[in-house]
Length: 126
Image 1: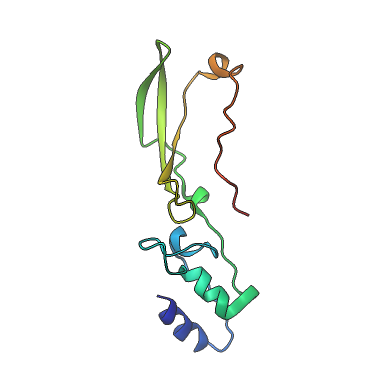
Image 2: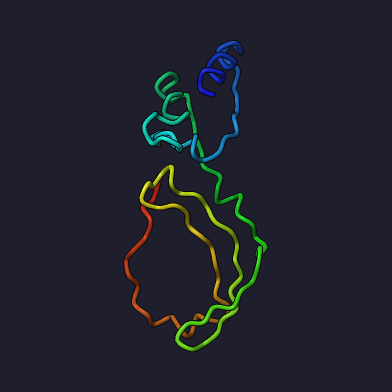
């Protein structure tokens, strides 16, 4: 993919180009998704084009605003309606994580608002 992109981009004589790739290819510091050993596409392109390369992960934009399914989740003997909005693969950026899933517990705020947090959060990517 990298060789193909470079060949085609260089043939355009400086034209502005936008490529659309999965998030495993767009994080400049990431390694190859399958092997975790070869720099990803964005990393390789950055080495050639430097700051002319701009990458942006649009995963959050792609998340569904409509629930895929709705389940019932029981916590401390109380049942909550829980719409499920999908998941995002994190393994290319955070090797210790496979994915993150998005659920919403309906009408649960008052039951949990005074609970302490664990402080366990995913790192922020700038």
